[in-house]
Amino acid sequence: MDSYRGPATLEWWADGSACLGEFDVQVAIRVAGGDWACDASLGPERLPDDHREVFDLLTVLDPVFTLRFDERSEILVNVLRAQHGEHLALTAYEPAVPKGWSKAPVSW
Image (cartoon, rainbow, N blue to C red; front, side):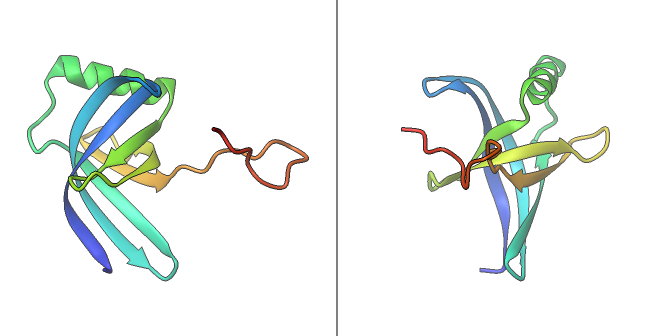
C-alpha cells in the first residue's frame, strides 16, 4: 500500500491506564521510498472550544499521542501543528537514546 486516507483517533495517555484525551482525525498517509509522511486534520467536525483547549494543553504538555486506526492497529506519533488551524503533521515517535547507550532501553 502506497497511501491511506481515512479516519483514525489520536489518544493522549497519562500512563498505561489513564487516557486523558481522544480526538477524531482524518489522516492522509503517503509512502515515499523507505519513509512515510502523515498529515491529519481534526474532525470530521470542528472541535468545540473546550475540546480544543484540552487538545492544545495536551499537545503543549507532551506532543506524543497514540494514533489508533479502526482495526485497532496503533503507533506512537509526535503531533505538530501545521499552522493555526485544524491541520497537523504527524511523525513516528522515537524515544531519545541516553548518552553512552547504543540503543533505547527496553521498557517492560
